[in-house]
Image (cartoon, rainbow over all chains, first blue to last red; front, side):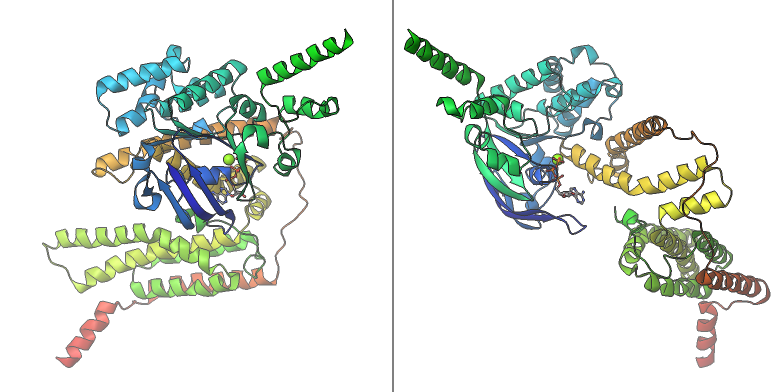
Length: 277
Length: 268
Ligand SMILES: Nc1ncnc2c1ncn2[C@@H]1O[C@H](COP(=O)(O)OP(=O)(O)OP(=O)(O)O)[C@@H](O)[C@H]1O
Ligand SMILES: [Mg+2]
């Protein structure tokens, strides 16, 4: 459980990036944090594993205040994947890159071997096992970064823009994986601008703006609220846009799920047919 | 990354900021030469104090103190190494004059850091490039130099992000013996160097696709011209150099140890 209480954070240059944020993240929560560029999302999530310590206010991870322990200790519970994979890749092979954290956490050889093989396989990287990560494409490097964190199986996972540069198949895999993690009662927190991805994942959505949380609720409510989204420079998911336009037909407007949309449209159509006959 | 903060230029207007960078550079070189020529604490201390009016006129006290704080580690290192080597050389004894020499060496380093810090704090990279160009340096070199200077703070920021990313994967920088600690920096340095190279290649591509170097002969919108302040500074520089040479070669500079001996002899 992560408890954030009235956190303010200023960078050295006196820019207040967080202006009093409070939030409770329970074990097993699945959260998407959204908001315009510079809203403070990255600054906020860096508090979850102690990379940043609040200027005022407190952050507790599993009851431990983040100022009282090291990042390495917190990292074992809270895995963090950065926006830019090039900020972490350094090993000679993809395999070593994935094993790096496992070695830092002093896992035994056998576990390391198993976990690395599993992560390589899961992220379709097995063919690159012995390749230098620097020779991979942008999307592949991002996957190596993801694999290198997921390999140690942390209780909570924080992802900064995980879908950047991923093709549809990899995005879908990522979604499946996040859902699997969620089913295993792991906490997943992701920052993203990809509104369609969020609509498909259906998490709890938190909107940030100017260093504050301006909305917190289920995806269905937040992603179909045009005024709220406009404030955060987000467009409605396409399905919600269609249903907003279809409002005059008497259909509901808070729809973001494709199967639900299909059911409603088919039902409406059937009703119409019935009326015609 | 406080060392880099001490070199970061901020755009403000002050008599020092408005000086011609070429003259300022000559001044810094003059201080540099003087600091190398003197090895006694007294003249070095005077050189140190002589920079203070510049710092205050430019209003960069805060950043200047930061850069000195950043240099404190190396300064301490220089002091300790000097003392320790003397200590071994003189069969495990230490004299007051040895401490004085160690102090002078440290002071010399501090003076160098101080004068360069004032120079970089008060000179915009743009003017620096302009100065290089007007000193007949080929534009390619001038550009490379200004770009390098401009990217120092960017790299410092990047180093911080990389450290964060590796700490998040359980890296503990401050753990282990000396060798282990040095090895801990590999996961920081490799991504930093790789991304610097990648960035430079990308920058080159982006520049070429925007027709960099299409025109062989460039003209500048701004031209550097010497003003009153610049002539004053060049005079000060000349005076410093002449005084230094005179003092260094025609006057024996007394050391503090000399005075201490004098005083103790007087009382005994
Ligand atoms: N290292 C830093 N030093 C100074 N200011 C910073 C630093 N990092 C971020 N900021 C500032 O803090 C504010 C919040 O930045 P942050 O990176 O948290 O935004 P974000 O919501 O993640 O944006 P994006 O969607 O672009 O990733 C911005 O105004 C930014 O300029
Ligand atoms: Mg961000």
